[in-house]
Image 1 (tube, rainbow, N blue to C red):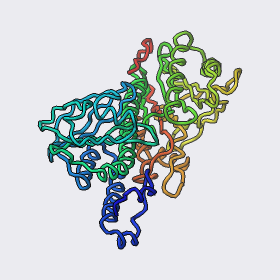
Image 2: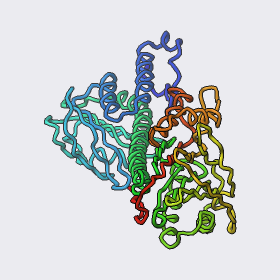
Image 3: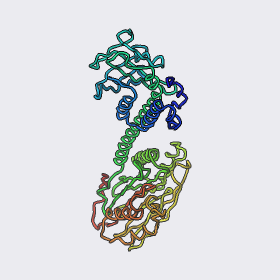
Image 4: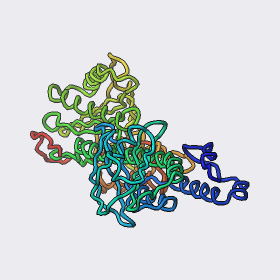
Length: 455
């Protein structure tokens, strides 16, 4: 069957149908070639790594058309140049440095005219430009790689023999070229997506470290107080935050916030809240309720739709062993005294929803051995595989079971461990988990004239 073009009705992009059995019987040689092209096209479009793909293209084209030198040039749209990306001489890779504008050389001509260029003897063609391949090229076949008329690149086959490439070779490679173009475009998109993902992951890792640096580890110089914090974000970046702030002689302010939503936007909003709170504390050490009112006005003024912050703010007065706190929509703090955990019921509207909100506050005179726990809702809402929440009952049990002499840090670790055990291995947390634990010692003699040191 001499007229190979009768098979041109087969698909030219994407997957193709297998060669019909009737063709295998009636035209065995042509059908064998079609079957080989079908197998090659399916194999090529399944490879996403470009280097692996280019090597495989060279090997598979060799099964259809014999050549001495094989190279691939890809179109660089921004530079308006064809650039060599792969070359083989016989079975060995060769360096590729060629760049070619459109309409220059045989490759530039094939790319510009969107058609194959087959030259029986390059010595008789003025368009031919000699490349450093180490061989004396006599014939050449250039196939443009097109994706819906968009130029992807060219295949360039060279031989040391004149008239090495036939019209049938040209037709086969033109047909295969559309699949090669699809495969190369898929590989390019995959590489772009992978690079973007790696860049985003690197940015997230940097942002996570910056976010951790914003959060203090603890505070020294607070007589009568053992203090600990725990922070476990559900993602690379968390929407929870906490802070310790000097609030005058012998006084320490504590804040725990939970931004609505998750991810990068929540983390940035939380960082804005931390920065704003620290700015306000520099100019004022007013009551917790007053501080929340000022912070609420600032957060509402930021005009970030659908974002709000649930937040607890408290001031520990070391000389009087007293804690005063206000709540802007956060979970109730817990007071653990004599092995029993009780909620400190103080309520309020989350920050950023309304411009003018007044907050209530309450004060508690603390005793040696008392423990105060601030926890974000991610602690109580930690779920296991059956979607059962950790809940307040389990949290109260952990708090009631602790020995009076264990440190605040040990207690915070036990709570985080208990939520981990409840969720079970392999369970992805759906929310950030943040804790502030205050254990009261109320030292008999202490110097209250110093400000706390935050570290």
